[in-house]
Image (tube, rainbow, N blue to C red; front, side, top):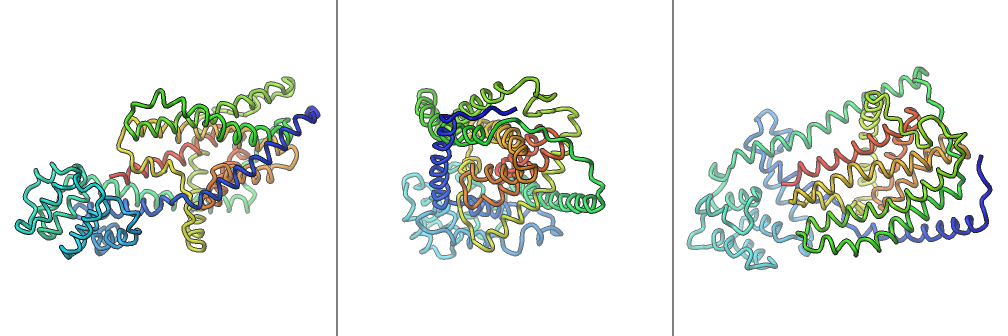
Length: 451
């Protein structure tokens, strides 16, 4: 049975809600200024296509490679505003241009000329005009860049077998298959499962939904938890206090590892106040009303059944989320605001940094967010507004919490699927697994494109 809320508690909730509205509004506005990761992903995908060509079987070249991957890569680079071109992209565009005069002019825009002196001497020396040897290529100031090496080789000695590294081509062909063919397979499976689900719903043959046990927390409690704990303390105050202190630990680390460490520490800082408030709220509930398995209903058993439900739900929601994103881009254009973590993973070459980002995005984030949104918010609201509305509200709040206008609708669809899984499974554990699977597949796809 819920206790009456005291005036001070209501005042704290109202203040937290108003401040959260301000913080989230500002965050959503700022998301328009954050670049979308989509162009970077498309460019990386095209680089893989360009390298994979020699190793792809002729029967699959039209499907996987297209007619002219070199021209396609050049067109993608040409669409990037000049002021946003990196030194590497300038050099790639230089090699893809046919005129040496254009190449020279582009190279004059490279910010760190000393860093590329060897490159200019090797590739733009008019008296030599050819690529001398693979050993010299490996001694350039930017080694281990097969894309740039192949581009410049072809530019000066032609589309020649000397420019092909078959080991690299075979490696990226596997990446190309995993990043292009597997998603298509998953989408087809997901559509099939969706059709089956709709048919069973039409026939009224779905399994009965387990009882959803409402958590006797009031709307005021939820506002304090989400607005006060998650947003004000978790997203603003605690990171502002702990991240500067983390400099004492991370100050001497390499740049990418330092950034990943700050992300890891920042996320832990966000969870501390929210989980503390949640613990205080739940521990204050009557133990007589406590259901078997606890208020959060984190039922791991039956383990295999839970995994199966999580994987099936992930397959079914994937085509819907992708379709939603595609429609938004078609109708409204790219709204930007991608999660900065995506580009961190895409461009990170430090294995320890990647491990920290993996733990943050694939383990901590799904567990924490599911405890808050599907473990607490959804069942708490269900007693007042019903199951359907509680799924909808929890999905919207989940999407808003990510502070991205461009990702709001796709994340809302994902939140709806997670909420429906919470209802159909009667457990929070499949939601954690599905959320972790979603983040994990995204993480893996970024690693496949990071060449």
